[in-house]
Length: 407
Ligand code: URA
Image (tube, rainbow, N blue to C red; front, top):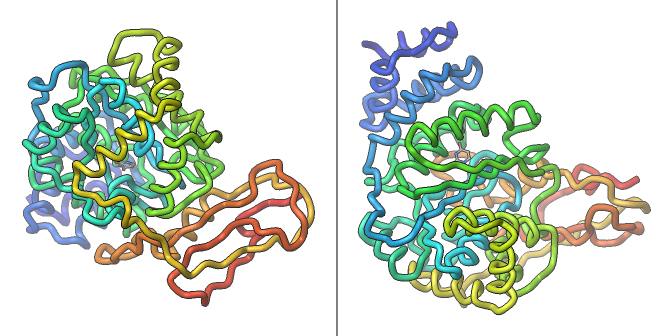
């Protein structure tokens, strides 16, 4: 077998056998297949897609690249969640502690930023000292002890996704239904939870731009979950507007804390909804009854305390969380009503500011990002601050009309 023949076959839109997929992907993990060859194969997959059989085979190859966690020693029904990615999506940082504070065990394997979308692992790494590389034993012990652990893919846990994900991020090969389904579901199955809530983001700032594609992704992920004996609940939610006010790693951790401390907003409502579904799935109670528990734990501060416990347990020092002290206000050049806040452009801007990667080796600047100051349907005057940028240097030129539509 030869990697160039495999690339050619996919380029010609022919199906790859399991042996060919294993040759290419395992070869990449073992470094006999090079970055440029895998990039080319990923692009051919992006353009030509994959059959269901290829997708299921690739999930199996990804899962077998590491261990599948056996969480049976953790009592209770373990529930995981995953978002397909968006701009300002810090839901895991809020929902994880809420759900864990209600006694539902949450073992979560997350990813880094991907394309213009942010990643939970990068956000958590903005907290000085936070360890995102838990060994299997540490991961299990932590869920047993405090109910919540979040880890990245490590040597033992889905290492294939770690290397392919990093390559997709910088080769324009993110937006592919088969590659997204394989990436998410291999992590979820290796992560060992009993039940999984999947949030498929739809819209300008999401990887799925049409409802038809979002449904296709939801459908294939549900079928993969079922095949591996997992109960999967899928929802499709809006990503035309950034999720919350803050975009950028440390800034998003700060906003997650504000919400856990009581800030009312659309993002909080979404988190209450997702947390209620997870609690309902784990405890076998109605979503309505679960919502009452969720609101109680949020309002009483128990969910916030769980967040602090979780950060400390993974070595993070939340008192040292910081953002850049170079700030720039972006002012409106128009008077009117805000009719659109362009999530995709904000996602690209945050990568340009340094909150995401353009090259694999890039180091993220955890302290940069954006805080949105004006919201949908709000009226603005010329000179009003629309958003504030936290930047490395002040030499940046922004046209507010690329980010806000004002009518
Ligand atoms: N989230 C993932 O974990 N993988 C993807 O490919 C996209 C979103």
